[in-house]
Image (cartoon, rainbow, N blue to C red; front, side, top):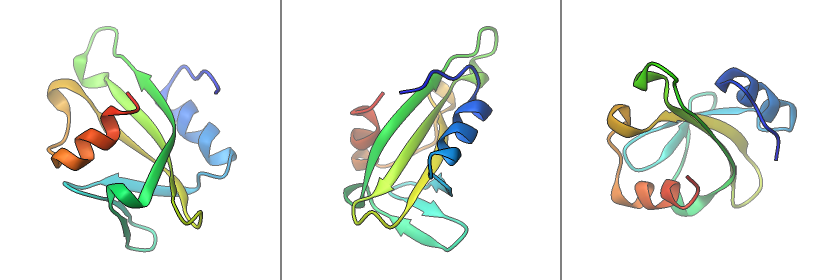
Length: 101
């Protein structure tokens, strides 16, 4: 696994490795805006995780996830804040993400 200094470096590095889709996390799924495809927690695996901590601003705390659909057809990236700035998500999604933090 690579070491990245910034979120941008991590996202660009993962895209260079073939994680080309951009996902957004919703309450109980991740959604690819490029093709409107949704993946539920049981339909994808997290293959890499990079956590960044803001030195002075807690709002800079972010996690970059590399994900792949279980059928192998989609590989992409999503980012999310953690701590007090984290998005509201389902318990199933919390469990999926917590396994990799």
